[in-house]
Image (cartoon, rainbow, N blue to C red):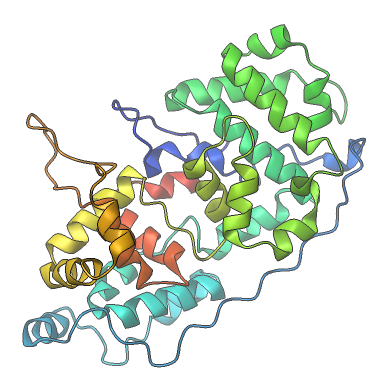
Length: 354
């Protein structure tokens, strides 16, 4: 059994909440070759080319005397070269993303090389996804179903329900598939611990993935669509919102430019990032003040805010500023998000633990 989510008491979406969304090799029923009645092609999609980072990008923060002094104390190499063992541990795309991030802000270097990223970005994580299933469409279906199973429940409950769900499919070579799930009655699905609403979600997702004519069953769609187009299509599924779609994009599709400002861990990490770099927030506020659309966004209440009786030890930053700062790290915001999760002390590594 693979990683299962933790749910925080507030019910807010956090990196700790996401592990069940991303099936690994040991999590996904892999004997799909024995059950191919849905007729979905097994061809593996071509890897999308890694986006090219702009040449000589302007750094996000000025190299002030204070920053230079800090860099010297932390022994940040002047050329920002990463340790070879760090490079060897991670995928080329992730390394390019990390390099881009530290070029934009060299002060991120120490937090980046502090330790390897054992989830998204690591070769081990990538290998598990590649080997998880010869039928990538089945992998995508199971990932989304698994995310529904784990919504609004504790890690232990999610693990229990998923195990019971798998046990519904008994017999030699019989595994959970979209088609086989549709053959289950509502009562059978409820018997594993799914609520009536979640049963409807699982049935709808399975109905879509059992249709060979649907976009989500076409490898060409994932190969050619933009990440926003993928979000739009995945969010048509019952039970899948934008946050879940983004988690699916980074941890299952391994997209390099995903950013979830509505994730609690990301918000906390950004707050800590900007607390240590007030000049970055000052620049962001100045730039946002010149953008009418973003200015209008400031009139809405931020996703995260501290009530008068809040016990938070960090001060949330308005979504508009969070997104604006993150734009500086395009087209590698997935790497920047991993760094923010690390800054927030969010246990993202739970995604790759048994």
